[in-house]
Amino acid sequence: MTDSYVAAGTLAHRVKRTSGLGFLLVGDAAGFIDPLTGDGLHRALVSSELAAEAIVRWLHGDAMALDDYDRHLRARFRSKDIVSWVLQGFLAQPALLDYAVRRLDSRRSQRRVLTLVLTDQVPASRGLDPRFLARLLAP
Image 1 (cartoon, rainbow, N blue to C red):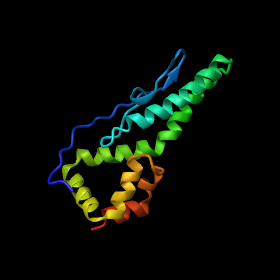
Image 2: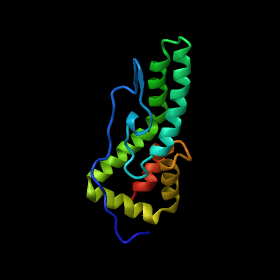
Image 3: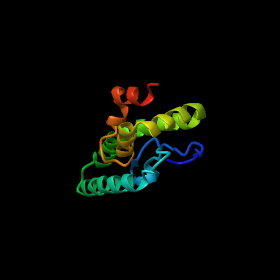
């Protein structure tokens, strides 16, 4: 537990496409959202692996390889991105953030689940489960 915390402003950025004719974006260049963990290393490793597969397919004549990369990358991180946007919403509302932090401090099970979600050790959908959110935010 800490005595206090400070939240920075919005750190997120989005891109319309992660691939196109002659380019693939990986890591933070492909979009950055997570305000707490940074998530950059994990996303960089996953996106670079998907990019390498797409490049090999493209070089072998698969015209859909770059579009598939964009689709696969977005699908892979969709739930995590939603969790991150929810966290950004909490950061934008200090009273709500304070309420949630107090709940996390007193609710070990929910704190553990959120930690596992933020560190990509469990699917991000666990952090979006209405039962999890209700247990976390209930008075």
